[in-house]
Image (cartoon, rainbow, N blue to C red; front, side, top):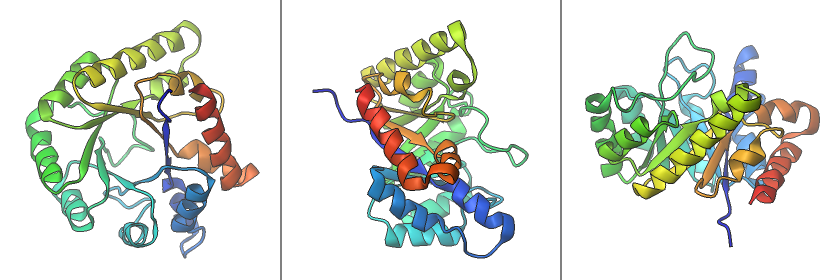
Length: 242
């Protein structure tokens, strides 16, 4: 029997909407509860340096109130390391972060930043926090993750999501090949970024992938159908792919 593919729901952009007006509504923790009831296997939240969406208080509440595993996306900085070590989430996914970007625009250069990243991977791992590296699906980056001793990688699927035709086919093969390479190196492969109802099935069908993390699309679709329906449909599509 093919392994069930886990769905991590990123609730950042519920907080983005809240922060546009200030106050407490809409509440990302409430969104996490709805996602859990609709079939999510985990909750993802990115605490950015500029706190543009998720805040420290949101992380406090998620840790206290949500039964699902929390995947904390974070930059490799001392500030974020201290927050992760204080909260002890189930997982910490190290992502690249630039203040001027609208969203995470690509994978981490694990190969070029080995010496910088090694400290954070070691510190998080020593605290029994499962470390993930958000990387491009290339052999070089998978090899770098293996050298760093990261137990998990999450492949950036943005390029796959934004090209068509033969380009998309090539990107899909690249993701599949790197997922297989990750498993060969003892690394658990995940994927995420830009996945939608229309493009998720080919990625979800890659047998080595263990988890997909999806956020912006699900929150956007929830405006029209409700978050429960949005998550349930994604869950159904992922299950159908397996």
